[in-house]
Structure formats: structure tokens, C-alpha cells
Length: 74
Ligand SMILES: [Zn+2]
Image (tube, rainbow, N blue to C red; front, side, top):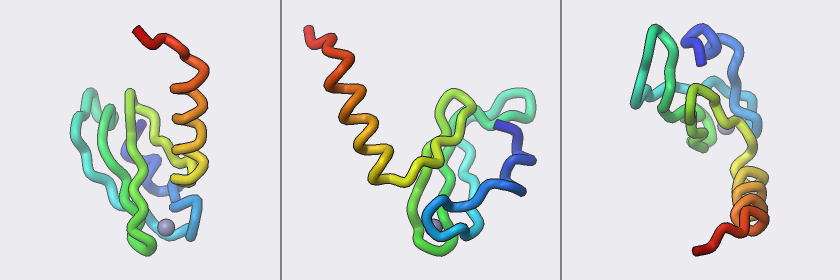
């Protein structure tokens, strides 16, 4: 994601501003990092350049679903 995106991103829960912790950056784009809400302290991961701003409950639900439906258990 572009750093400029920080101007428009907000916490999906309380609409407060987010702070950016960059773990990996390439050509001015944040590839991996963490967004932290300044108000409710919820954290949102950035993976492969894409900020995951789903509310944590929903995110966990989706992850559980994906894990269940991928069914690739070796
Ligand atoms: Zn928040």
C-alpha cells in the first residue's frame, strides 16, 4: 500500500486514526507492516502490500473458514 493511504485509512471499529509500523517496504510502498488504532489499540496487519482492515472478529471468522475449506491437510 502507498503511505498516502494512511490519510484515508481509519479504524473500522471506532473510526480513529491508525499508526503505521513498517516491517518491509519497497519502492515507497509498504509491503508488510502493522496498523495500530490510536484509540482502541486494535491491530491490523498489512500483508503483500494490502492492509487488512476487517474487524478482528470477522477476520478471525474468515481465517477459520479459509482454513476449514482449503482442506489441504497433509
Ligand atoms: Zn479503533
